[in-house]
Amino acid sequence: MHIVHLRASAIALALTFAACGGKGTDGGGEAGGGEPGLDAAALVGTWSGTFGTFTLADGKGKLVLRNCGYEVEGPGRIKMPEDTSKCDENTYEGEVRVKGYEIAIGDPAKMMHKFGAYLDAAGQLHLGISVRQDVSKLENKAGDVTVSMFDTLHVGADGKCTLTSKMDRKEGPKDVPCRFETVGGKEIFVYTSEGEEQGMVYLAKEGLVVPDSVEAMVFTKGK
Image 1 (cartoon, rainbow, N blue to C red):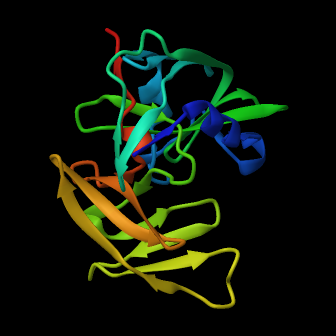
Image 2: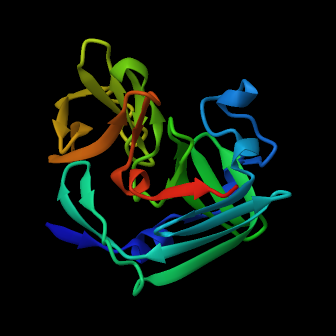
């Protein structure tokens, strides 16, 4: 096992989101009839959890995220600390933009900090940092999964996977090993990338495959 610290990941994911065409908090998502993703209106309010708080109102937001790091136990499996009282806190605030399964917070004219996010079947918000993978729609274990900034993994209905890279378009899609397995009560999607096994958590009810670091960060909406 090795320990991953979220602070380094946050620096790597500090993006100028405005240039990517992110939607403001009036954006749609699934509930709005647009592309699959979060319904920004459903995020309005105050959310809290073991690892911080997230508040959204009138297009402005504040995220206080406890930087605890985590232990990697295997592909798609991590162990988060139980005691977060000694964790450093990182605060992000400013304009909030929602696009697909991403929430960005900051100043569009300067820098927006991007986080993966989704609402689970119980209505809880999962919001966290992912180094490479994106929350992706994967109904019935088939669809396209973004596994890095340049790479998309297509999971066929027959269970076979092909990888397409923007950096290597001449060679076309490549067959890569992949499988679904159950570990510790969670279903994990395991695939091979750059010669190593990587993993994400598969959520059948939500029809999503999500980075383990996002699945572990749970926030509940206040009444």
